[in-house]
Length: 215
Image (cartoon, rainbow, N blue to C red):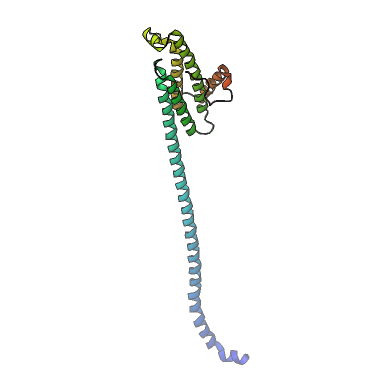
């Protein structure tokens, strides 16, 4: 061994140094560059994944907003349908098909209730008002019959016989319109619904259904 180092000597060390130093100068930066490239690729991959997730969240929010906008549009259209069905009942003649208009109103209320949010009690209120309206129209038409029929009422100008039913239709229209425009609070509807249940106790627990109908 001593003979080897004696042979290798300082010249051998110098030669070895001349070889290793340039090699190290190449390998060390290369290793650093490789690690840096790996880190950059990982960071870029994470950034792309984050961008993908954010884009997916944005698309889902846009979808939800579009669905809610469409639902709101349909709810307002259904509300307009109720008002349209109510309008003729505010001044309908006693010789016109009152029962048919009440059926149309019932159908419009059913459509409206299908589009309102769960927990929105305005649909229940409309159903109760419809029950009340049928009862009031039945009473009014009984008075018309007792007077001599629709023609007698019209000839003698006794349409005031229908005032109670007309007032119901006007009040329902104005209240519901005010509710849709946020001028009438839901509490007003709930209080009125409670009044109807007190006056028509057979409706308790049954906000939907036929109830007594005018002939």
